[in-house]
Structure formats: C-alpha cells, structure tokens
Picture 1: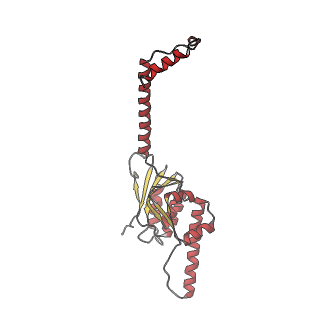
Picture 2: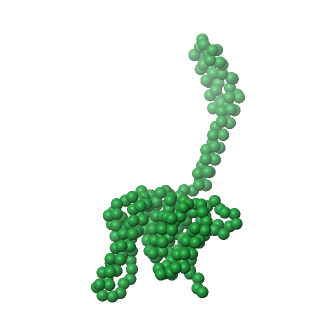
Picture 3: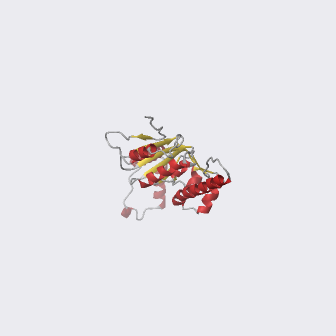
Length: 243
C-alpha cells in the first residue's frame, strides 16, 4: 500500500516525556499530492494533531498549494483546544497564509513575507463549464476572505481588492494590517542587554563605594547648622579630587 507523502513534520511528538510545547513544521508545498478526494491524508493529520494536548508551535515556510488542504488544516487547528502559535520564518504565501490565520498568535521573522492572492484552477469544456469554474472560484475566494476577515477584522471588500492585486506583505506591514500579531525578536540579545545593564550598574556602584571610602563621612543634618560657605566649598573640592 502506498503511503501518502507528508508535507508536515512533528517534533517532540513521540517523546516519552510529554513536552510542554509541541512543535509542528510546514516546510514546502502544501500537499504536493492531491488532498482532495483523499480520505487518508486528512485523517492522518487530524489524528496526529489531536493525539496530544497543550500548546502547539507551528513553524511555517511555504509557497502555498492546495486550497482544500489549507482549508481543512485551518479548520482542524481552529478546532484544537490548545493555543496555536504560528511562527513564519520564510514565506507564508497563497494557501499557506490561510493556515497562518488559525494561529492564536501569529509571529513573523523580520525578514519573512506573506502573500495573498485569488485562487486559481484549471478547467476544460464549453462556456457553461467555464462559467461554473468561475462561480466555484468566487466561492473559494469568499471562503478564504472569511478566514482573513476573522483574523484581521478588515472589511471583506478591502481583502478582496488585496487578493485581486496579489498583495505581498513584509512582517511590519502584516502586523499593521492584522495578518500577524508581532515580529520575532532575538531573545538572546535581550538577555545579553539586560546582563550588560546590570554590569554597568555594578561598576557604577563600586566606583561610588570607593569614593565614599576616601571622602570624610558627611556630618549629620543637625551638625550643618552654622557652617560657612567656605567650609562647604572646601568639602566639595576634596570630593572632586577623586572624580
């Protein structure tokens, strides 16, 4: 029996110790082999998705593919009870952008791209068949707009025009329009900056303590009464020698 070619990959899925976060990768074309009219592939994906629980992180880099496959995956992810974080590290184009819309939180690499456009198909026949194909594509487009509209809250007419124009979005533009929630950052850099700030503070405190040890201890407030200006200037001059 021929096994279907998988276009997804789970990490930590079969570990004995249940991971805190399950990781799913979509790298490449969504369904190189037809998903339509195939009962095995959708069932396989659904079984793997619902075999565990807890948050799922999806790494996505795909030029798109089968809109039927994307529709079912989108629906399954929306039906999943745990949080779904989508991280786009390359491109989420066409059908892959629909899958991204299922994310509870959608994050994009600063260099990544998202692209939305009208669905396409191949048709054969007379003018009646062509008209039916057009009507079918219009319905498919309306379904895709539903997913975009839920995520972005943009008007359907605006989304339709964006699809007509084949719209490309960098990470910042996608966030501004609501297709993504945030831009991925380098957590290591944030940790290093925090450590560097702490180090600077430690150096400053060490210097202050060193100066304090060399400068005579300040007098108590009640002892300052009646002190002359010349005495205060003399003390400030002594402190400046160590700065």
